[in-house]
Length: 375
Image (tube, rainbow, N blue to C red):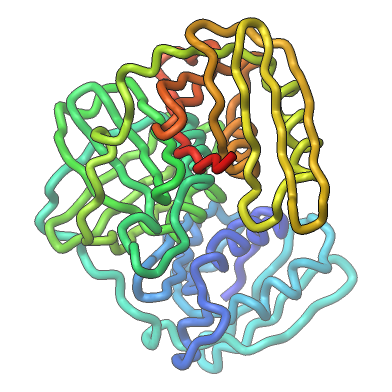
């Protein structure tokens, strides 16, 4: 059978599907993408058994319905070197040999039997389903990634927590030192639910979400699975079933010492001062007082130090507090306003980092725990 498809579109979809496939598979068929053609639509599927990603693509021409599997790396290597153009796949349904034809040439490679590819299980016992704006979800996940934990002992905090209540959708991540919460105001179908999404599905969502897409439909199931319907892509994945810490309890409510700073200015000052910081702790001391912030860092092992003064608006009693400079830069780097607000209470309690102006229906809050200042 013969199928014609745009090479660039096919390559783009296969690149996204390949993000699911493990680098090394003991079962060869799991290194493949399943191709299913029906009614001139090419449906593709990849899985690592924990995550399944499906994709649909309209064919230019179709010779009829069929199904076969193709090694993902093999076809990606071919498509990578072909300029954008219509290409033809001639599939021998008996031998599964595939002849990929393009302008001025062709390549022949072996397909695999579709029957060997794992079946997609029907999702049952749905517990919740709700929409979320695609751009808001993408931004919330990008913000959260900077605060996820890498500690294997805290599996729940390796993922991103979704906290859904009627009218609000919170995306939360924390590694115990820093926390990021993006709060989206939206219609959640009057749903109250929560779950933890692992890092790999998070990265896949961020890669495949079409910026032109309006809404993503999210569904959860009693067996600990979730489905993300993203238009041309649908992802089914396992969730982390551990309990997530009560993040609301650690967010301070009475930080009344408030500094307003130029975001680029504070990031630049931190970058310079950290040259003199201890590489093990990255400690930067911040002295806030009326209209001025003094940043200092030192490395006693190499007898070096750095200090810089920047202008800021400050309300409250003077305070000296220490933060891990690289963490603070990571958080400030996720904000997109000209000015940022840092709210403090005392040197031993968490500081809040906020944009000077919140977006409509999208509220972001960041928290950073201080480091102990010994002198």
